[in-house]
Image (tube, rainbow, N blue to C red; front, side, top):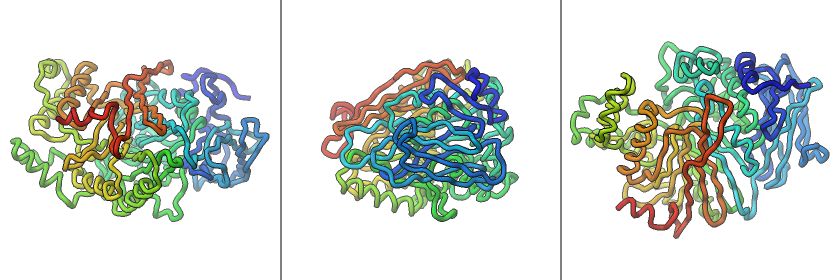
Length: 564
């Protein structure tokens, strides 16, 4: 028997012990965890004939036998597949099964059992084949436990119209209780566990376990299958092939730390394991939804990325606009700087060609970082002069830094594709070679909503980009206050051709409906992440159409008119 207790008391308790049963009447599956399945259930990485189902065994040690069932009905009267697997401490008692031999486009229900206890029931589905009429995706990113409750996940769980959740990375964060989000965590009693910055396999396992106890997370994973890619914080902030901004020499060997983070990631998420452990880092996919849409996911953090450029290392070269533009061309735009690995580019080239040649209507690219070109806006309005007198030291430094970048005509974020312009052009060329200039890019990382138009260096249209804000992670520019950030976003759109609209003031997700005539996307904000009581609001919507092989927002002339 599972006791029904308040949501807040549940979360306060499980964030420490991570083992208490949870019940919630507001979620589609009333029972979200049970004593031996405290981290719930999840499914994901589907294709037309198979899907991964996942759970973790709690409160049991040693070798554990776990039975599983997958059925076409909630009562499990029509069980279409079943089996038994073993788990133990070598994989942190996680359980992952690739259930095969399934029908395309079919909904299924699954559950696990061990030691006389059943898991919650999960709901999943396989990918469709043929000519489906519609696909509905929820696009989420940047879920930081100490910054607040994953209410966006809860909202997604309570939307039965959603087919799949696409998580674009920063599924967990690596920081200590004194690091990013620490103050918020203390106020909300959602401190990170373990309390130090995570470095070892045991650390990463414990952090994943903590994140899997958020009630919104439990509900979403039980209700919808997941397509997920990693960004940076699953390992450490701003990694590249040889290290990371948030990895120091006294924290051990970078490759050992990265391998530990990847092992925990594969253990704790419903994704297919590679045949060879050495291939874990080569994590990319092509999901096909009949002839309606294809989704190609990228890996841009560990396998091909050159080290990020830091403005602070080039201060002497940034004392004039002329020098700054030369720096942008010769340093940031150095031809040897890469963003994707050769293998990743080869995979993309082959799969985007398959998508194009098969007659698929929509080509979606699952991408970590914002792809659109974005030069920092000029902040010469009275509101920013006033802010300088009102902000604290950190806020003033941030505003001064962005103001200077705007004066010099430099990008605001060199960790995004803007820091790798040659690699971006190479990516566009691969798409053009396949005859695909209708890319629908979905992006995360920035803690902001975006609607962007993409052009190559020769002004050829390449597609559109939709960026999702954080589930709980706030945009750093909120230091400017609501009014200041609102005006910053407006100026950013006014002064950058590719930025059509952006909003960094809200947390939430994107709900994207794809059909044979067009795409409709709602940018949905949650009212609060510091309380379990919240509401949702659509703060912006866009319609996307494909005309003559190019994507457009709304009417056909909107993008060209903005470009002048």
